Image 1: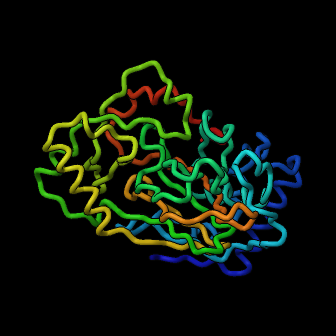
Image 2: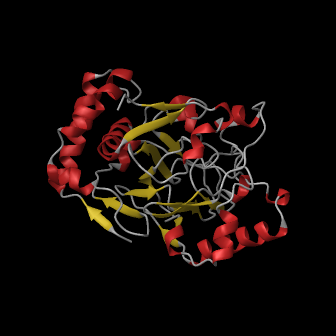
Length: 325
């Protein structure tokens, strides 16, 4: 697992930049004026800090950025639901937005977590067995983030606030799998749709036919994937396609790695190459549970997706960008 560690001076620089933005813009990371200021604030960061945010540069499709400052006592208890987080850990939200702005353009979703650009990922009572970030007791199946939508992020950033039980995030790169030519041929055809997950209740009620999409695509830079088996109606496919999909699933499992993030670490995932998930765990709901913050990033000029995606309806979901790039 590649690890890029910030120096104490670089971590302090990032914290100061985030605190300055919060001070100037109402003390909340959701202030539209703060979002507009992100590009210039990110451009003013030191070369060393920006170099640590250089693009993912290995076939594994991910790296850990370490060395950020997290004060557990100042953070407050882990909220029992994302909607109760409010602006808790606001400085960490802005740090994550600054890192995202160095890497690309931060994204949000009109239909998820009230359109916030940083999501709080915490276990929530009543959601233990869902295939969403609020679950705990079930395996969160490996998937590409927001696979149902053509505007999904190119990069996913998972910043660890708290993880006392060392709950692991799983990750596997399509560029490490071995598939036959026949499997590649089958999986690059648009055979099945990917349906919206349970975090998008409005999209699940969209009045339109689901559109088939390819699972794999041979981009100019190598294979990419779009994968979410929990929300892919495999029963609608022929036997050959189901078998090929199963072999891809097995291969992704074979090459998977587990990353137990610690506070102050950010996992950067290339969402075009890597599926990610999470191992099961038992939530305590006592304010000490695992707490991640998540941001999504569009990388302008990327060539990692089929051109036909631009014609998809995206189940009516609107992607929001923090600022005009």
